[in-house]
Length: 236
Image: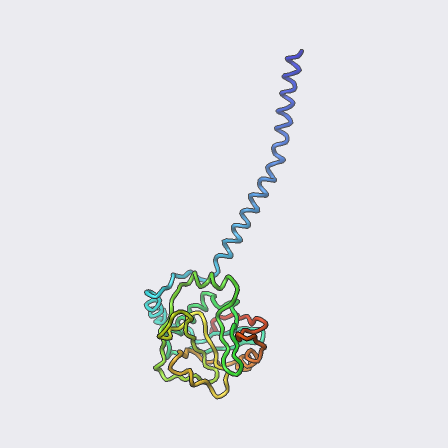
């Protein structure tokens, strides 16, 4: 009797253990699914650029842009802001800078960057932001500078789009490829000629440029309220 009783208890124990195991599987699956979703979301967030890209540096950037500008590139881009849109025509006189701006636009680099500097009655400067994604995009695209191209006779009239010098140690005024400025000053800003490279001009939306230039700024000429942009190629 004792043996039968012991054997019956063993069978019951296995029965209850067998019945309780499936209840744990959904929990394990839920955890696994949750981890998968998080990983996929992180992967999507890491793919910040709209197109595949090679890493550009001081050795390959100019050869790459030389080949890139041989293509039949578009010549207009649209900047959307909360104040309206700005249409820019890119200049053939500055082929490397034009190709660079189109390339970065196609990659989606400028999207969600800001007009981060507003100098009243002078210029508005864009292409940077304090958002971590901007730094991540730059790291994905590369670290390079563009040589100045100032001998084509294009002056800094009102509405001209030009490229600022890099903040890096830069005695030759090499240009930061990720930023640009638009001359808002009435009458032009001709003291900039010879030092910075014009590569475009505003053909629509100078009223938007004026509205941005009228915004309140702090002591660093940074707008009090962020002025975000989206930049796209104008398709004809």
